[in-house]
Image 1 (tube, rainbow, N blue to C red):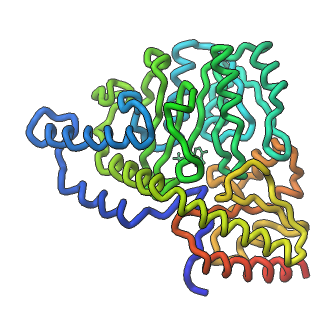
Image 2: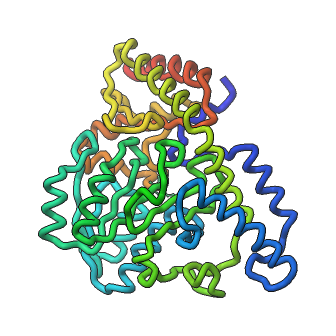
Image 3: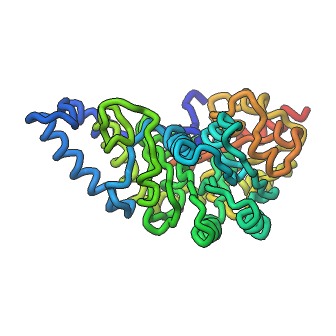
Length: 373
Ligand code: PLP
């Protein structure tokens, strides 16, 4: 087997060919979006139209988008903004949040009191406990991602939104993993702010955006300061080709949602039934989850050795943003180090096919048997 089989799509995805083409085409236009001259005006007209179209496919107001370099930046902007405005803050953070939330909050530990909520082993938070914390602690904001990047578990966003609205608490939702995994309309997600990234759905790396509700408009402040682009929310020359790449990748992913979900469900079932039939001792985390991510632990198997032996079949130990550390996500859900050291994440994208799944199925069982000897 010489071809790479890529099952690490939760960390990043290969770019769609069409997206790459669109990006390259953009380089023919080189004017600065913010310049007042013929080329700048042409660029603004071109991109503004595209952004308007984009806002229609994700159901939002284009004036409430801040283009950023990635989801990490979008997440950081919210924390910085709340802190600058309120000086000392108290927040609730689900303990399975991405490092770009948790580490940013911890960076300001003198100014931010963090109340963690640990989900159970299935990834569910205790609703009563959450409600109690909101009532008693009166936090300024809640941080909860929509779909967890290590387990694929879907958080109960509807409930969290409802409570946050009722008690007038800001709610930031990291939506980095949702595009192509669930159907969504931004105007239906009743949160204060949302984070998105392009490279999780076959778009280019280096571009994402923050969507914000109007009640945050006077609270948001920039972390990149300069020429005042994007209404002063984020300075720096607008990367037109990147935005076009993001738009196109979202458009293709959303358009092909049904077909891709069907395929990925099939891949998921094929892998699980292969594990069942082979009688290896394994456990898959989560019930209410997307089929794109399988977090599986194999009894008495070291995950580093497993990954090395799988060679060109690319899976991971969890988040790429937590390299060299045991998964704090699984730990906070109550899993032991022994369990975590035996777990891998298999994550599918829209470019995977059934031949790759068949190849994986053969290889995983033979590798586990070899490692158990
Ligand atoms: N949030 C979540 C849920 C993620 O899965 C990731 C990517 O690993 C990020 C944030 C960070 O994304 P980016 O690489 O765009 O900063």
